[in-house]
Length: 131
Image (cartoon, rainbow, N blue to C red):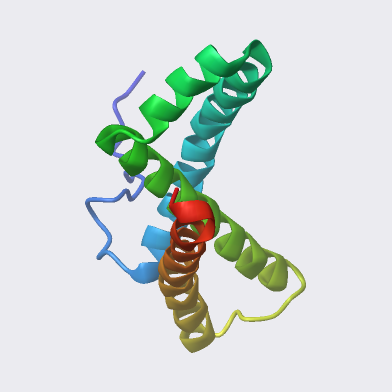
């Protein structure tokens, strides 16, 4: 076979980074994070069902600095995936395809997820004497 020159498929190193590209990548990444977080929720529910000692061990892990970081990150992933998923549903309905609207909705999902995460943690910290 002759070696023919074929065009290479463009990839991340070719394109200039834009918010639309970042939100697409983040949506996929947060989906993976939520899947792993579901295992942590299953661990927590299993510990709750196993009794006070298992639950105390789970709570000790969740309240550690690393546990707090993981829970905070999982909360952000949940908020982002939720808001960006709503944005995708709106686009699936045929709205928001103008470039300006697309960029604005992308930034709205990023900033909105940060605000929603902060609100969730403020409420969690204020109820029942802290998280």
